[in-house]
Length: 111
Image (cartoon, rainbow, N blue to C red; front, top):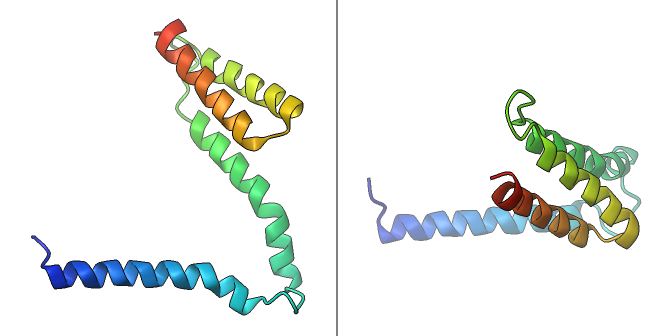
């Protein structure tokens, strides 16, 4: 089924409206002049580390310790990320450096 021009335009407008609402809603619901509820403050404190943990688990879920390379590229990349982050204290450099090392390991060393 192919969409008409009108249907495509309505879809784009609906997505744009949804994006605008989700971007501006926090500023409307929690203005700077008011203290946010304790629960919202708590979520703002605990969700970022929880999401990082979730992403790490998701990225490592497919590793097999029964066949080559036995998770070695992933382990080396994680160690490199931790060392790089402790040294540079920059998330983007840590993630970029770890990604580069992982890609190098799986495409050149462990291919």
